[in-house]
Length: 134
Image (tube, rainbow, N blue to C red; front, side):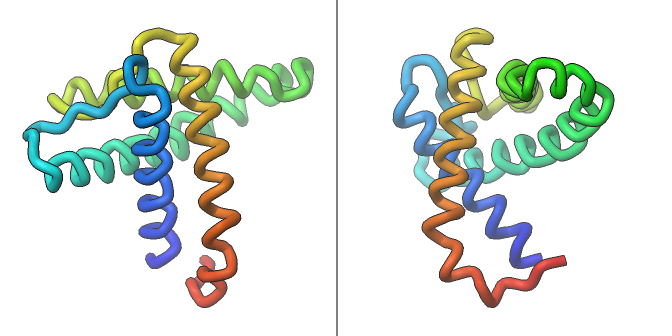
């Protein structure tokens, strides 16, 4: 449970930093202008992002495995951009959340989120030795 919560917080932090870097093109809209609502919105969008990436992304990666091999993995950029746009669409249906300008910014946003999550994971790795793995 602790590892899942840690991954959720890393994703939320990566989403926040991505929106700071790519502000006019990738943004987070909270349901209320307060800081608490913004943080809750970040965590909810990170939860949606994790579910979409785990379920839909997992299915796509299994089904499209030959395409991944054929393109040497470059199709993953397209898939991750589309998954980010899907997260934006789902969160907009809920009335808050992620907003991505277009597909190109979705691909770039997915790359930035991936790099930032990777860097945060590397930084936190020495501190997470005691968190259980299952």
